[in-house]
Image (cartoon, rainbow, N blue to C red; front, side):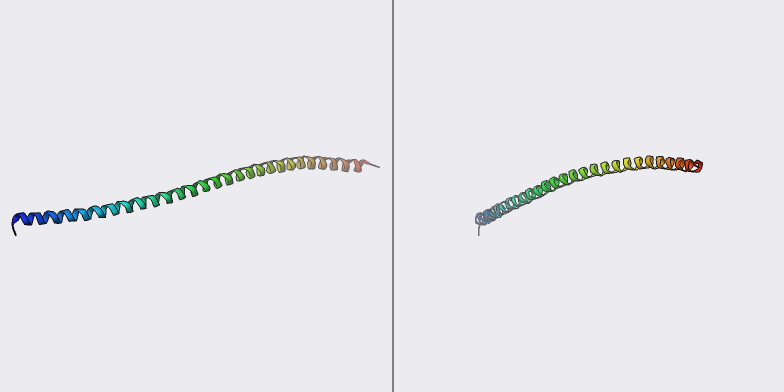
Length: 107
């Protein structure tokens, strides 16, 4: 076999290998594109779930804030009642003391 024939044969093999590599790369490129599309779809689903979670969390925070305001109002009303009760208790004790004094001086 002459050098020209050997060189031609090697070049043909290189060409055939390059065709095979191109086909493999094309398949790999399509596979990567498909995997990227799948990943993007999963990211979209995750974003949707996160959005729904954020909406639920906001609603929960609003309900909690409303209930905290209600509790504060109830505590303030209870405080006012306790202060009024204490004032009345003091007045009743004072009246009881006066009645006792009057009863002692009564004939």
